[in-house]
Image (tube, rainbow, N blue to C red; front, top):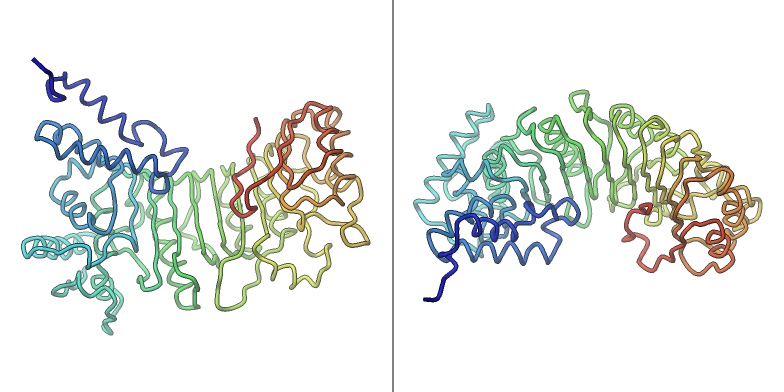
Amino acid sequence: MALTLTDLPLEILENVCQMLCPHCLGTTDKIRRQHSAWNMAHLRALSSLSQTCSLLRTIAQPILHHSPLVGTASSFSLALALCKRPDLGARVRELRVGSEMYSQRDYTITEDESEYLTKHLAEFSESRGTPIQVLPKWWLESRHRDPQGRDQIFCLHSSLALSSLAMSHAPNVKFLDVQIAWENPTHFPFTPPGSMPRLKELTIAYAGRHMNTNLKRSFVGMADIFLQAASNLTSFKAKNWLIRGIPDTVTFDHLEELHLRRCRIGRSTLEELMQKAKKLRVFSYTPGADFLDTFDDAPPKEVFQAILHRADTLQQVKVDFTLAPDVIARCGGDSSLYCMESIRDLRVLEALVVETSTIRFGPGEGVYPRETITDLLPVSIRSLKIVHSPTGLDSALCHLAANVPVRFKDMRTIYLTGRHGQVQTAFQAVGVKTFVLKEEPSQAPFAMYV
């Protein structure tokens, strides 16, 4: 007699489901679930498996909610499931919320669902100390502006209503990805300070093309709310974010990784951040967000001066100003005002990524003294990546290679843009692997040592 899948022992069925779960496999730490076609395919397979029969549904559904699929059509069903099934909400480890949560053309809400969610929104918001008036058919009014106050505006945004419901019923979430669109209001009222103690990794991205002054204030304020809610955060990633000051209520006691992509930050704010994040190991900064007004970003010189506050902890640093030529222009082309100075005091630094414009050249344009790079680096360096490395830098790079056996004994890899035959030969002679960058600088991965 032929066996079916359900004839297998429960332990084997559980293992099959776990093999389809990115969180169970550990791939979510290396490849973010929502940005990986491989992980998405496995989640869809797990979702299909959960719909085949009651037995597989019982086994697969809790595992599926480790990293629930969040798309426009599934957002209502996800919010309903988490509200009605606290056991499933407790299983959630990863969640993506914000502007992608809902589109009215992709889902037709029933009267019962409307009544249930409307009642739940009102009751739960009141229990969290931020009561809101839930208006009829709130899910259809995603672009309406109500003049009576932002708390009421919130409930008119279906994407934020569903996002808040999902987050508030996922007490054990570890990875949270928040996508903000142009029309979103400023806050999630269901995330009071300390309400997300298990959250370890937070990503906040603004998805709009431009950001005006009012929205910048809103975006920063909303980020502050999440940072206050996640008191044990270890990793924070921001994209298209203008950072102006950090409230006293925001602490980074456990923060180990900070990634600011296409963001803008001034020196005083960056120094304040570095002083608060006393356990920071990884820092990356690529300015270039498209704002509608000017902002005095910290040039590379000030960025590196600020990160010296974490000389005792920083192990990996990436600073790439390729997308921010306006910062160079404000310095009037004076490399002494713009370029980085020595970072030899970063005594535990192992990996560094910089682009050529951050390295000070000599009296003539494009002329680099041979001691330029050697005098910049700490002896602990293991991996160096120089984006846009010109041939005029070859002499300085060869001088660095000559000093590897004496000063940089732990150096293992160097990444360069373009072919530098003499440089590659010099590093290979002292046992340092050389790699030629082929990807676009703005998309280049963080340089890791091997």
